[in-house]
Image 1: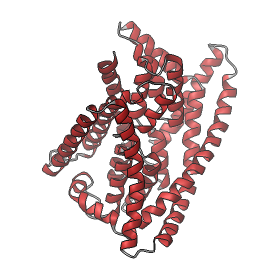
Image 2: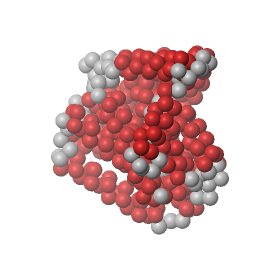
Image 3: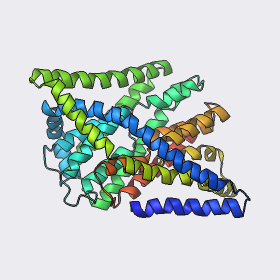
Image 4: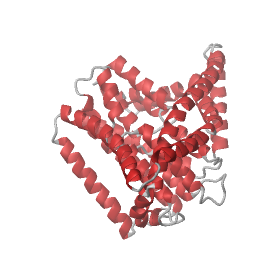
Length: 409
């Protein structure tokens, strides 16, 4: 699947470039295509530098948590649920605890912590993989849930809106929460269908029902707070939980007489080794995405959607936010730039800006996640991972449109 997808990006970019040259008289498109290749290669190295620091830091702390038995404790707690969702993962396996930590970090908007924890979890799942180049069912489910962008506290979105002068930066909080819940549910159901998982199992229903009740209660509490209080709580809770996790790892490690410094250094070395193997995968995927963007193919798709929607007599306001939605699966930085550009052009509280912010908070950089997580363990055959992850993204975009028309139209 990755071979077809990667080749398809270049073929579509070539076709769009030829159209720009022959039909629109724009020979400069080929210089933009070549420039994008070098720009994306440069961006890959810059991302690697960031990942080197982040991975070594968090892999070090995770090694302390593993040595202290915290990861194994989480695995035992979630064993009954994961035995139903991932029957090939043994009860108490370290991957279960690592996946739990990853989901918690994503939910709190702690991206810098979530990625290295997720990579560690993917390596733990790879230890159970009988065919190292092919993704297992457990790896696919983990990746799809990871890329479905379940975020309870989208602090970064609030920050972008505040920077652009929005009087109420947290205005999109509840829309994002509803839309990201839809994307995660769609991802889970699509994987369950492909893998024939029994979601009607009493244990699964208990966990999902309990999660829904907690989420509903959390939303009710937040809805009762003022905008300023929600923003303050979001910032405080995210940073407090992040630093609290670090202190908890160190405290439990010290209590169990773990040599915390030596354990940190050992884990940091593993993070360095993991990171250095990612560059080829990042270069391959980001360069393919770069030429697709530079060819004008995405702009053509956007114009076609606007023409179709207008021809159907429907409201076209949502089309102005679609650049963020179309680019987000390929590039988080590009989607962020498009979100900021939309707010600058239309105002931070315009319908297009509010929708773009909701899409940004409820979708994920699917192909980046795919390249990093599968690339870290050398997986080349993704099976149904791409389709299920993109379906989750689509659900997030459609839910964002519906919720924003409900809240802001």
